[in-house]
Amino acid sequence: MDKYYGFVLCNEEKDGIYVNTTASFEEGKFFINGQDYGKVLEKYFGSTSLYYWYSFDEENTQKLLKAIDGVEDPKSALIERFGHAYGTMELEKFCKKEGIENYYDCIA
Image (cartoon, one colour):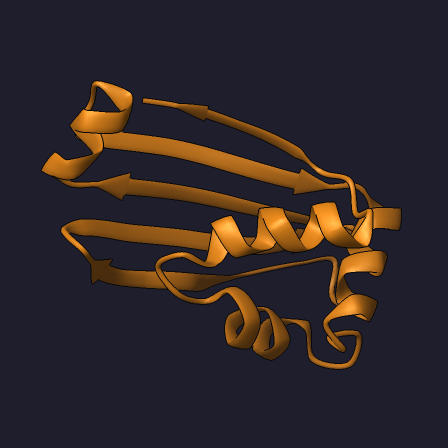
């Protein structure tokens, strides 16, 4: 894997929410940055925008890639599995089920 590369994981509208997430690898670690926006978010977060980020250390990056058969082609595997409007919610559930640790934070 290259030292660094990034790609768009999701850029779509679903149920009145616009979802923009990017993913990147840097020195064996995996990161996701996202922004969701739309009036419907105000009901849940008190704001029309939600910014969030995930980070995986090297060990948990490898666990994730192995669990989704993405060691050879991480980008394609991640987009196929989590590259849609509800992808990060699926990622959270998947990681919890598989015992894959990550850091998550958000701000509305």
